Length: 227
Picture 1 (tube, rainbow, N blue to C red):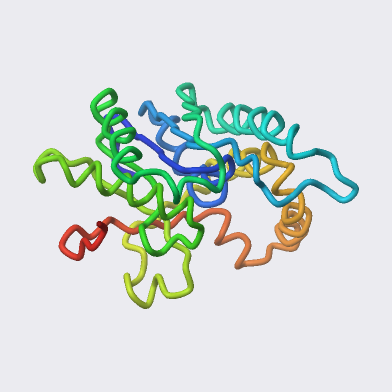
Picture 2 (cartoon, rainbow, N blue to C red; picture 1 turned 60 degrees about the vertical axis):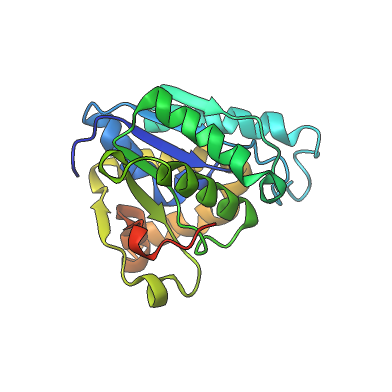
């Protein structure tokens, strides 16, 4: 993995980082690269309230904030930013306003790499709004001074239209940190952790691959269609 000057991670929800990026984050931090994680919301509209319920709509934001802080600790993140937007409303925010927020972060931090979702290939409206804002902000910069933009995509058509991911990180050395990050978001991940950990005990190859390889697409500016 290339040594970076500064990494900026931008996602809309607590736990967005855990599934496909947390190992990459920990690897950068372990190599001495500063990482800032800007999480736009507290995921207060998360679907999982438990059965029987462990939370209400009023208490869930506090729970998820604590989980996000615990996840940041698991990854080694010292600079966690909670940006204060409301869950499931980012698609209604002014795109220019969101882009300005990203621009402010870029101007402050001067990242050599930004990690976020790939616009049009990240399914959730909040994911898409975040991705558009990041692309819009980076596009404003002269091409020679733009940070690299590594994107997560998981829509059904992403590989058909984008091709195979061009960045594969083997994060085997920090897989335990990745598991700890997933466990930190237990209110939302309990449903899958039990099944996943059983598969890991049985050395299920697909689960092991998912745990140890993180996939990204470099943003293709020549095909840029984000408005």
